[in-house]
Each structure stands twice: as structure tokens, then as C-alpha cells.
Amino acid sequence: YILSLMVFAIGRRFPRLRPWGYLGLTLGILLFTLAPLAIPISDKLENTLYSGPVITRIQSPYQRIVLTRQGQDVRLFLNGDLQFSTLDEYRYHEALVHPAMSASVGRRRVLVLGGGDGMALREVLKWPEVERVLLIDLDSEVVKLASHHPQLVQVNDNSFSDPRVEVLYADAFIRAPALNETFDVIIADFPDPDQKIIAKLYAEGFYRRLLPRLADKGIFVTQASSPFFAPNVLSCIAATLENVGLLVHPYVIDVPSFGPWGFVLASRRSIQPDTLNLSVSTRFLTPGILHSLFELPGDIKLGNVEVNRLAHPVIVRYQSDPRWAAY
Image 1 (tube, rainbow, N blue to C red):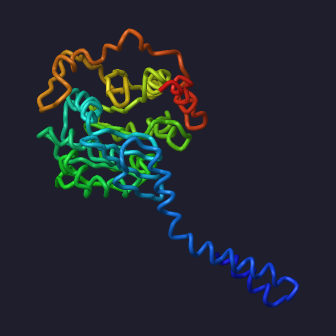
Image 2 (image 1 turned 180 degrees about the vertical axis):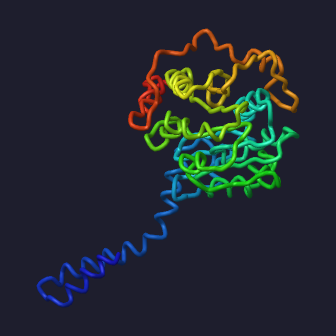
Image 3 (image 1 turned 30 degrees about the vertical axis):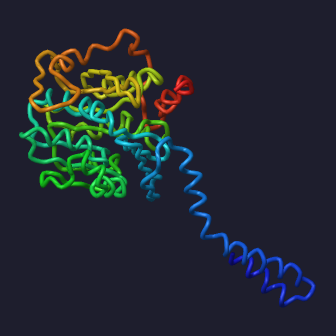
């Protein structure tokens, strides 16, 4: 628009360029007239990307945040990638949180990395022994949405209002290892490692720097993508955690909106699944499921893979498995 006005001004000053000046003015008026329509048009185009009606859209400094609702199914998308469906998110978050909480000797202090939607936080806060939860998330807009949007507040049980919770808006890669305290349980709920900037959160260097923040008898757990469409990601995360000296326990559960989903639990000591005690209310997990959780399905096996390193983020290649094309 400004460029069009500049062309018009030049045309008025130089008679030979006057026709171009009028053309510039015409284009400027056209752009000024159509500008208010640009956002609605872009919104309509964006709506076609989702199966349900868009009820909230936010552009944060880090990502595009979209919330859709189709009946009782509320879905959160970050940069177009599904983060959860309220119809079955409890399966994912119960599996992420409760095996680690059950396996930990202590549960007083918990660190959650990512998880700005408050769902993992909801599960952590079910344990009465919890005295402090520190959540580190890069994007304050996600946390604000989860703290104030009625549908999300209802689903996450208004977890951010709990006085035991503290939130830091920071890059977990930098901030978490720099903390001056240790935690009984560390829960990593990061996006899938499909980019180098995210792959660093699954790298040996990060795990090695984070390890001092884990109490001696503490438990670490991370989500590990789809073991069916990207099986080497689960193997890579397990191998990387083993490389920093931890004992690993990979496991898989089924989330209807995602399909089979992997997790890796890690600790300095061996864990006997049949001794785990599930003493909080859950919708999906049962004591029987928990005790057999670490037995991988027959068609999912750990492969011979490379360790994911900061200088060589192989996990991005593993996450880009061509089998995703069939999903």
C-alpha cells in the first residue's frame, strides 16, 4: 500500500511517469479496500484444514494454535499437528504420568517439561503426596488458553489454579538443567522430534545435563512418538537414555485418535512392574494394565539405532519414516 502511494507521488512529480503514478494510486486504493477481507479469507482457508469447526485461533511468537470443536470432541492443534482430542486424551496422559509416579519412591516434587495444556498436570495433582509441581513451557499463549478457555479448563480440572503449581515460560533445553533443585519425577511432554530445534530435547547432551536434576531414586519419563509409524524413534530415545547411564523401560498404549503410542520410562535403578501401585482414580489405567505395561506388543521391537546427539540429530530422520504417509 505504501509502495503504491510512493509510485503515485513519483508520477505526479515526473509527467512522463504520470500513467504509472495513476496505476500506483489505483492499486493502492484496491489494496486498502481489500485489506479488511484478507483475514476472513485466510481464516476460511484455514478452516478447511480441520474436520471440526475452529472455535479459537491464536498466532503466538512460536506457533499457530488452533482449537476445534465437533460435539463433545475438542481438539488442540499446534502448527497443524494434533495434540489431543478430549474424547481420549486421558489415555495418553494417564500413561505418561502414572507409571512414573507409581514407580517413584518419592512424589513430593515433580518437574513437567512442556505440557502447557494442563492435562499431564491434572494427572500429577491426583497424587496427594505432591507438594510442588514446576512446569516449564516455551509458549505462554498455550498455557493462557488452557487456563482460561472454558472447554479446556473443564477438561484439565483447572489444574493451573492449584497453589502447588508454578509455571516458568522458558526454553526447557536451557532452563531445566540450570535449576537449583532436584525432582522425584521428571515428565517430558514435548512435541514429536520432526525438526532439529525439537530434536535437541531428545538428545544425549540434554539428557546428560538434565540428569543432576533427577533425585537419586527419581523417575524420568518421556513420550516417544508412534512405535508403529516411526518405530525407530522409540528405540532411539531408549538407546539415548541408556547411553547416559539410565535403565530404560519402553512401553506402548493405544490412543484412538493417535493409534499406538510409545513412552520411555528411565531410572537409575531397576523397576519391577508387578510391584507398582496405582492408588489414584483413573479412567484407562488399571492395576492389571500397569503391571503388564512394559511388555511390548509382538509387532513392536526395539531396533539397532544410533544415539541421538546434538551434533547429529538422527531422530529427525527416524521420525520422518515413510510409513507416516499411510496414516
